[in-house]
Each structure stands twice: as structure tokens, then as C-alpha cells.
Image (cartoon, rainbow, N blue to C red; front, side, top):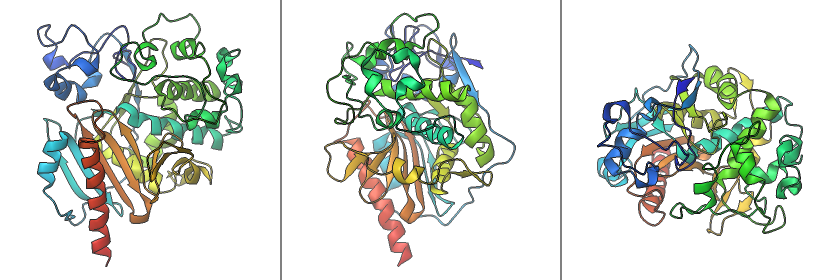
Length: 390
């Protein structure tokens, strides 16, 4: 383990967030260390070196000796100025892998192929994939099991009625506020409380929440529930998420570098957020999914897992889109992992396509601005692949 910050989705734990070692002077860091209030320059520096922040803990996701090859392919003409697109997106890294070959790879913002970059909510899709592995391994018997079967500390709460599947699809019906601009929102508060001895800090908070709709009837995006999924996997397997990820995917699939995963105040990985990995290893995770969840010659996931996980299980009131098991889905069969400030892994099985990007958008979320431009870029890449196929 390495020293790191105990943080939530917003890096808003009591310890706060900090700048990397090279820029750690007091006059660089803001007094309010919530990531949403960092300057753009501070984010540029910190996102690429988050694991060097002192005083708190991360777990390492260990890579193995063999590396999954990503050979260089022919450059892909996407029909636009990629450098200009990256500048507007404030991308630190952009890679396009198609049919297992790198068709484009670029870096900016002082970041490079040898470095890691924080994932924010891209980690949610890693966490849900570990649920699939735990089902395949027999640690989780059924997605229709009640959450309290695996997290007894939730007994007597609104989660008595909630299944593992409903956690995965964020349809628990438990009330939650994910407003990143509201300091009193649940997402800002749930990691700020005092830990209770013997209980994960997420469980302590989530068990106090009221029900607002019948379980399974309403979709609401809830980072706290992904953190519960992480507690559930750790409880079921008896392993840390980092160790289980290393065992099932990172080593056998052939990730090139170690990753790191932040721990919360009570020692669990913050499973709704905050892995740091290299751009190519994010792309390799996309390739693992494209390859049907096979690593080291063995199927890591149940036969029907990806068909359910990566297709619409819940509507999100956006035409053509939906939510699977912690994946954002599109009706054309593509799907994506997404994190604030522009992190993403886009996967299109039909075109054997993976696009991984790291970035530092000017604001945490901007669906009508840079977010829409990113969706348009994905479509332009799809179109470029289609042109080549003719």
C-alpha cells in the first residue's frame, strides 16, 4: 500500500485533496481542498500524479509480467483536426484502438504514456465487472439476492428491499442527491462523517437514507451505491477490490503498469471513483470487455454477463441512451464508462472499437458543451471505421 488521500467522488473527505509532490507548497494549494474548487492548473498537475499525495492510503492493483500487445496500426483519418479537438476538450490523453491495433495515440497537458491519470467515475464500470467475476466464482449466488445478505450492516434500512441487481442499475428507490455544486448534497456529505468502529463509512451513511420510490421503479445516479457495491464485493470475496482486480483482470489480461485505487476513511477502496491507471491500460480494459471478458485464456465473467451489463437496464430520460450495470449505454450497441472532468472509455463491439480519453474539462460536467463534442467525436470515429470497411 502507498500513502494517499481518503476521498470520495469529489475528493471531499475530511483530509481533503492535495497537489502532487512537485507542487505541494502551501502557496499552491487552495484552503478548500475539494477538487471542484481547485484551479485548472492545480487539476492539470494533480490528476496526472494523484498517487503522490501524502498522508493517506491507496492500494496497488498489481500488474503481471506478460503485457497484452497493442500493436501499431494504420493511422485513422477521423475527418477532423484531432489536436484542435483535444485542445477544446483539454484532453491529456486520447487513444483509439480498433481491431486490436492502435489507430491514434496522443498526449498533452504534460502527461505521457508512462504516467497514470485519475479515473473518477470510470471506476464504476471496473467495480461492476468485479461483481460479474464474483458471480462467476460463486462468491455472489444471484443478482436477485438482497444486498443485506452481503452487507448485514444495512439491515433495518431502506436497503432491506433492494437487490444486488438494483444496486448495479441504480434503481434502488432510495433517496439521493448527486448535485456536485451543492455542499449539502449526499455526494458531498457521505464521506465527511466520522467513521463508526467496525463499519464502512459508506454503510454508516447509506443506511440512514429514506426511500422515495419502490425498489426497481426509479433510476437515480448514486455514487454512494457504487461504493456499497464495492463493500459488497469485498465482503463476499474476502478480498480487497485491488487484490481481486489484480487477480482476475490486471495480471492475467496483461495490463502494462500497476494501477492504484484510493481508500476511504475505513479502509475500503472508493469503488465509485478514483482509480489511477495509464491511458493504454484503460484501453486494455476496453479490449478485455470487447474480448468477451476473457483473461489468461479463461472466462472471468458469466456467459450472459456482458450482454446484460452493457445494454439498457434502466431508462435515463435521454433518447437513445440508457444505463446498464454501471455502464452508460447507447441504442446502437455501443457503451461507455464516464467520469467527471472528461474521463472516459467508449466501446463499440460492432466496429471492434475502443476509445479511451483522460482530461481536465473546465468544469466537472458539461453535457451540452464538451460532453456533446465528445459524443460527436465518437460518432466521427465510428464513421471513419465504416468508411474504411466499404
